[in-house]
Image 1 (cartoon, rainbow, N blue to C red):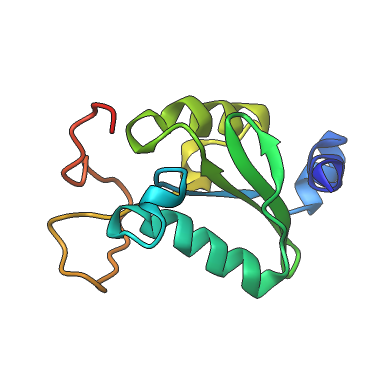
Image 2: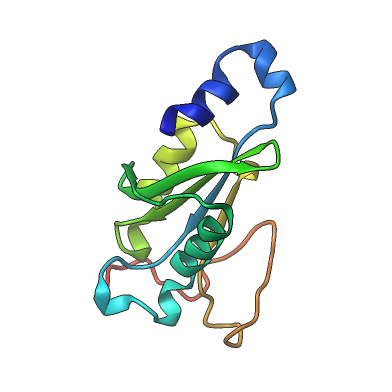
Amino acid sequence: MLNRVSRRCFCTAAAASTTPSPWLFVGLGNPGEKFKGTRHNVGFEMIDAFAGSLGISMNIPLCKALFGEGFVGDAPVLLAKPQTYMNLSGESAGPLAAYYKLPLNRVIVFHDDMELPCGVLRLQEKGGHGCHRGYGP
C-alpha cells in the first residue's frame, strides 16, 4: 500500500496538478504498554481513531514510525505514530515530510498540552512546546 499514495501523487508533474497533495498527520506519544492509555499518548489515540474510521492499517515501519496511508475522498492522507518517544519525534516526522516532499502546511501534529483541560481540543496554525521540555522520558 505504501506505493499507492506515492505513485498516485508524485509520478509526474501533470498528475500533481490534478491530484490533491497529501496530508501528513503525526500523532505524538510514547511507545510501549507503560504509556498506553495515558494523556501523554493522546496523539497516538487520535491517529488510531482516525485510521480505524478509514480502515487504514497502521503497521508499516517507516522513518522510525508506525505508518499507514489511505484516502479521505480523493485526498491522500499519511498517518504516523513516531516510535522514538515524544521528545524525539522530530527524528521521525521530519524525514517523513521530506520523503513525501511535503511543505509544513501539509503536516498536522496531534499531541497533549498540559495548558488545556482534559478533553479540550485546540487547533492552531503555529504552536509552542505544549509544556514538553525537550528531554527524554
